[in-house]
Length: 153
Image (cartoon, rainbow, N blue to C red; front, top):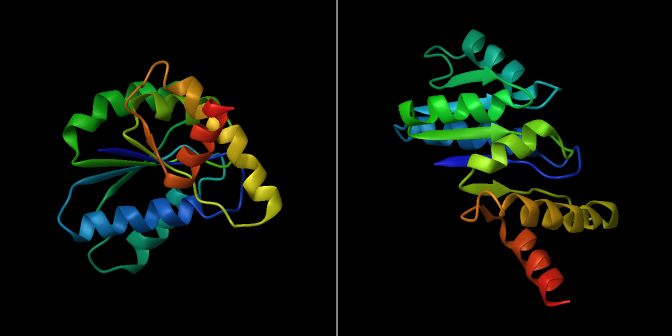
């Protein structure tokens, strides 16, 4: 399964969700690839820290990718792992779009404040565009609700 933690707004917890989900899946016995596709490199930095401070190490593999390489490398590496989790960053980038082309699920975390909620319209548009090449992409429930409302309008 390929899961992308993405969206259109920074500071909403995408890196936290991506790393926690990765750790949970690794502890459950799955072979997990964490892809840090965010220019801030929070997931990669966290992995370095985890490898240095946890006795058994991270228990997952983490790589940094950007741009079109996100799509090509995930497509090449995904069959070798049970799960691929992508930290895509907080804005509409080539890296995020490249990940979404292959994704099974898009998680869109947001803090329930007006400015953050406004970004859901942008994310709904992004989902619509990506579904032209990846019609099976599933998005978080709130993003789906916004998308369906836009389609009815």
